Amino acid sequence: MKKSKHTEAPVSKSTLEGSPAHLLHRVLQIALDIYNETAGEGALTQRQYAVLTALDGSEGLSQTDLVKITGIDRSTLADLVARMITKELLVRERSATDARANLVQLAPAGKTALDDMQPRVLLADEKILSLLSPPKRDSFVKLLRKITSAREAELSGEAPVSKDKPEKKLEKKKKKHKLSAKKLKKLPMPLLSDGASEAVAGEDLVHAPVTEQV
Image (cartoon, rainbow, N blue to C red; front, side, top):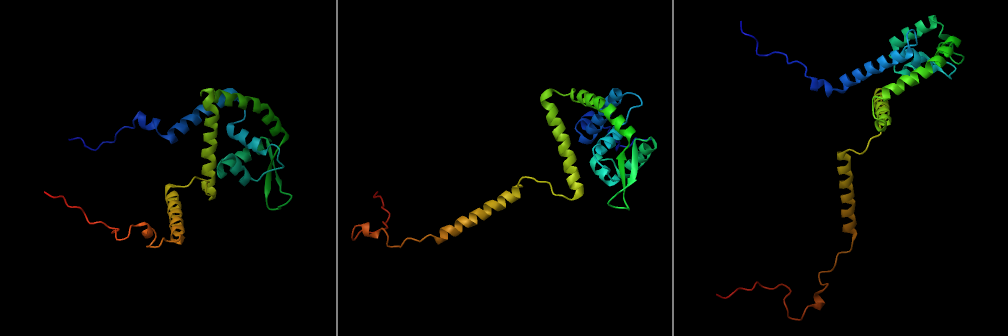
């Protein structure tokens, strides 16, 4: 039996090395490994820490607010909050302004766990950034923020502020050219006789071409 000519080509290493999705996934794995190593066994997970940090200093947030702040999807966050309430890290109370809404708040044990975890998280962040040279660390964090904010703006329907596109620039140039043309039309045109007085009487203003004699 002859083998089929059409076989799937294996994914090359260069293809993965040029894929933002793959690279970001690898970076996430590295970051979580460093976080878990630094935090130690039995410590808060990265998502638990994010929820506690979002609630710190507030009088309570709805789960919708927590989704927006942490970026955790709604179903995952609902399960996460429920488990953290069971562990007495969080409490859920009825909103004072909206009787139909429930707010999530830090419990005393959650505040203690957060305070204990913060130095270890800062150390983990330092270890992650230490993989880059000092001049590139701030730029790396800024790029991560930019990707996050651009995606959030896209999902919320807000148009991101951007520079003029080439088409808009060309349109502006055309409008500027039209305005200049209008100004030229308004300028007084010179009379046809202007300058004729300087010509010598009897001299033709247009000369016939001189033919060379052979």
